[in-house]
Amino acid sequence: MADSTFATPDLTTFARLDTLGLQVTGQFLEPDRAVLACRAVKGDELCRACGEPGRPRDSTTRRLAHEPFGWRPTILLVTVRRFRCDGCGLVWRQDTSAAAEPRARLSRGGLRWALTALVCQHLTVARIAEALGVSWNTANDAVLTEGRRVLISDPSRFDGVRVIGVDEHVWRHTRRGDKFVTVIIDLTPVRDRTGPARLLDMVEGRSKQVFKTWLSQRPETWRTGVEVVAMDGFTGFKTAAVEELDEVTVVMDPFHVVRLAGQCLELCRRRIQLATTGHRGHSGDPLYSARRTLSTGADLLTEKQQLRIAELFANEQHLAVEATWGVYQIMISAYRDPNRAAGKNRIRQLIDSLASGVPAALIEVRTLGRTLRKRASDILAYFDRPGTSNGPTEAINGRLEHLRGSALGFRSLTNYIARSLMETGGFRPGLHLRLR
Image: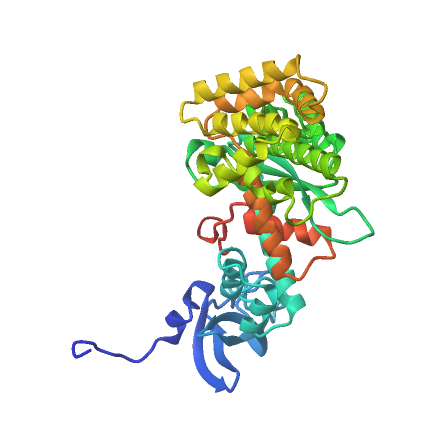
């Protein structure tokens, strides 16, 4: 570092206090924190009632938690002067609103740091409170209040939504109280390839009426703009969408369609297992040993797995399992077909073939056929809407599971919804958080 030059450090600029209207006048290092003595730059000597110059009366000190440097809590001791007007007798103090909200314990810089740490770096509130040198309740209340202001209460949060996804989510694991919520996701950025999906809202309960009520509360112009709703196999969500959204296209997610076929195969395997052996699957039973191999796509089977499947289906008692497995494989290969038109045609042919003429012995396949026929338009709509899938919705559900785990659970649904919106609602501190 031969060419480096050093000058007297400017703590005001280093601590980013110039943007808060403060100037550092001194510093003191304690074993567990750094303390910066500051004064407000703005004078405010004129009386706010009559406009006459006031005279200094006394001063008071305001203590604020600021963003930490080197993970050491930084405390601001702001000296605030008070003035008195000899003409009207009014007493006032210097304006420090640029540094912090009235009665706030965090500076605006500390609040911005806390919100960024929570949303972008996924730190816990406990870790943030430790870094700021404040209590958990102080950090949590400040972050939730600011998050509601810059994101949740932002009227433009619902602008430009054309594709949404809806799914249920378990927000707590308790025996008492409703543990389910309905999550509504904006999938427009995913379809347009402009960004990730984001959480739009979370509503208590999981039913047709819950989703229908949420949709009815949206403005008419917003509902008219929604083109596609991606969902799982729950018919209540579909009914609500069709009743509240004009000319909307409902798309049933491929994952849930394949899962229906997978469940059909598993139920058939268990039924035949019980019928042929008289007991549930045991180690060494052919059907039980091949349960994972049966759920694997045919194009991914190893030679050993292919041999196991051939030996399994060589037994005439397993014909029902073989027929159900064939339906499952056709569905998987259709969705994996790189030609979407060809894949759609194969799914349509499968649905038509299961609509009638299925032997009575294939109980599970007959049930699957009725379900596929009932949701045929929703299943086929996937192939006409590239990039529309409920997969991002499931991904956000996974992020919410991580949030709940890092917080060791939530007792308040209101706080959980607020934290979820900040975590997965598309918040970007550089775009949303502005010092007032």
